Image (cartoon, rainbow, N blue to C red; front, side, top):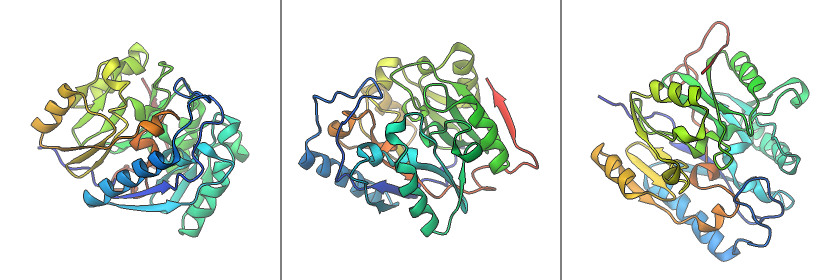
Length: 290
């Protein structure tokens, strides 16, 4: 019998006032194809409404005028209990976001941690990290460095399971992996090297295996609130399996945000993950690589 995820009832979002495409740091970004501000605002509001309708809450952080990608709140940091592990972005274009996130996390009463010595020891982007069955599942390669996994394990006192991402279009794990409950998750093996793909499928008792084409609709870049899956797209086969498992599927149009290479998971950061409930504490941190 599957049990609902206990985290994912509280989110942080970033107001999209200054969202635009100023540079290209992923295959979906094109500076000649700018998002429409009115449509952007409408899509963002629909996501927030869908979250609230599903029974969750979303706090809102103002966007820095010179940080157009800051709207992708998932990558600002990983909140676990009373701590926020700040991201150290791979690309310098996004690094100014961290200071604004640190102020918000700090004002919320969270202790702040930065991966690596002085924030330069290893790149870590929180869109690569998920609590799953007591451990932290982390994708590494395009954005998060392997060294960051050791820092995460030691800083938080948990087991970190690492999976190497190799697909250029699925550069964060939240584009190819989406936990649904304590037994099920969407997984796209094409995002990983062969060993990691096999190990990730073995880790999930009942995987919903996505083809590369299905995953590139951004369907895994979804959030789950109880039995509701809020999705940017849902191919028919994927919808059929989710409905069979008893999930309610809510699809929200995010075409403007896809111009920056992110969808619903990228735009929302869960801030209710708990050590001892969602992540099992260890006397010493441990890293397991596929």
